[in-house]
Image (cartoon, rainbow, N blue to C red; front, side, top):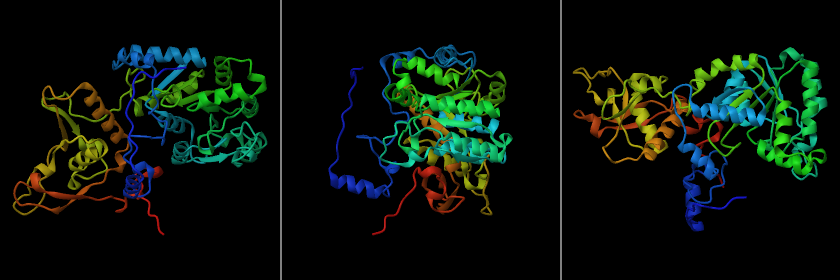
Length: 433
């Protein structure tokens, strides 16, 4: 139960404009500039409760020993009964850490169904995914109430055929995303647990869509109708060696996390948290964007040579970064690097000592919320920095080129942006009639 406290006006463009917008987006909904009836994703666009909003005002973003972390850790233990908790910035970060820790060349990961980023992380670390969904799972119109169940006979066959030593872990996804959000039954998970125990394997739960799965278990599974949601949650948690989740989905909040009761498993993953996510007890779990420290006056200066270290200096990394930042955020910064220099008398580039993007802070202009928006977009861009390519001149004035230059972006893997963007984001499509 809830009541609406804040409203936002929605505008429905006429169908002619919607057709134009779709053509402009290359018939790719990810490219639509849509601020109205957006049902593309539930990641990060859920409405938070008044208590969640209130808790954010009390957040402690200390570098280490954060009170906010302790609150979250305690709540995870209360709900899941797991002693050890590792914070991440989102669910796919959990997948990266788990894959880094447990997947090696030749590993096999059986699962009820894959998710895009999960499979990518496993494959990136040398493993393969083996989907062992029940036959009914791919039947679009079915009476089966738990199409997310794992096929136990197939699971045993994979283990016996390949050997338990080749199985990195068994993964069970709640509310299997790519086959229509289908749940697994608690009884099926108990049987999967028995197989894992028989062969000495870890059972890992992707709990990002657990809330949906819990509802379906209580509504559809006869033996669970008298159990509370908390009781079903604890039963599922007790069957799992590791639970990981995206809080953008589970909890309608931000961030993500991994929890376990096994200290050895915890210690194996802990080192990757500091490497990829930040210190364990961060309050805000920020991304470590490379900046000039200690901070100087005027504004924030991003170290472009470290931010986009895949771009050589003669392809103007600071210029490339400042352009990319505007594209993803609308925030206009200034290049302070080689593009701000002049060529020598022989026409050779004078490489600057630093490649910086300066984000100035006009006095008494921007609110903290606007700064946080910029921080969020910079953090996103840093996580996806491999999308940024270098630059080359197409028009270069002899004097003050910094002000009047024209530069084209070019991609190190080709001219089509689709070759640079994994998973379909920003991919242009061509519809032929």
